[in-house]
Each structure stands twice: as C-alpha cells, then as structure tokens.
Image (cartoon, rainbow, N blue to C red; front, side, top):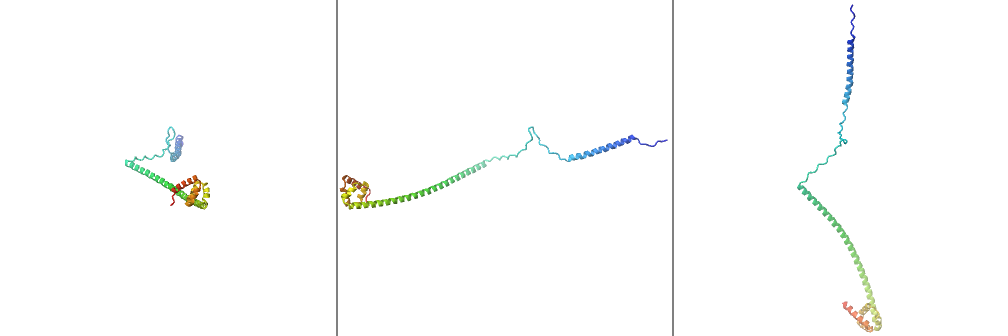
Length: 210
C-alpha cells in the first residue's frame, strides 16, 4: 500500500530563509539609498584657507599704483621752465602787494604831513597877527611917549630919559624930531648921551629909513 505524498521540510525551509534574506537585503539597500542622496544634496563647505605655522594666512591688501614713468629731457626742461615762471609770478605778485602797502602808507603819511603843515601855517599866521598887533600897540605907546617928551622941557625930559633902559631910550630918540631930540641929549648925562648917540647911529645904519 502506497503512502500519501508529503513535501520535504528541509528544502522548503531553505527556500523560506532565502526569501527572508533577500527581503532584508532589499530593505537595507532602500534605507541607505535616501541617506546617500541626502548627503549628496547637502552643499559641501567652502575650503578653508591654508594656514601657516604662525597663524592663518593674511588677505592681501590693495596693490600700490604703478610708478610713473621717468620724464624725458624735453619734459623735464619744460617743467623746470614752468616752475621758474610760477616762482617769478609769485615774486612779482609779492612785490606788487608790498608796493601797494607802501603806497598806502606813504599816502597816509602825506595826508598827516599836509594836515600838520596846515596847522603850522595857521599857527604861524596867528602868531604873526599877534606880533603885528603887539608891535602896533608898542608903536602906538612909543609914539605917545614921544609926543609927551617933545612937549616937555628938555631938562625935564632928559631927567626921565636918563633912567630908561637903552632899548626904550633908543626907540624914543629915534622917533623924536631932531629939533626936539638935540636939546634933550644935551641936557642928559654926558656918558649916557654919548652911549645913546652911538647906539642910535648904529641902529639907523642897520635899519635905514626908506
């Protein structure tokens, strides 16, 4: 009598284990793939600047401008001429300013001198007027004395004239008429009369009448 067909357990178990292993591998592969894509999508950090033994590298500053090319002989001569002309122009302007200041100073000095001269002229005119007035008064006084002495007797007039100062005596005798002066001189003291006659002659010689 034949027994019923039964599948063997070992092959079935091996097949089941293979399927489980394949499923696990597929699941592991699916988990790693997104993580790799995420890592790939993240941007890489910028590279760090190289460092030296003393510290980080310094950032270079702005470059200095390039040196100007040397001037040619013609350009150097032209520049020298321009500098000389500029210096001469400045010197001329300085001298012109000094001359203008001197002219202003001279003008002010001339004005002050002119004003002072006008003041001196006015003072001189006033003094001359005062002297003229005084001289006129003195002349009028002497003329009055002359008339008095001429009206007196010669001896009385001589007594008074003997005591007068010589300048006043000379002015009186010089203005008296000779007919009146001669008797008065004869009546005066002899030494006084001689001195008066000598001085009167000298006075008339120095200042002759017109």
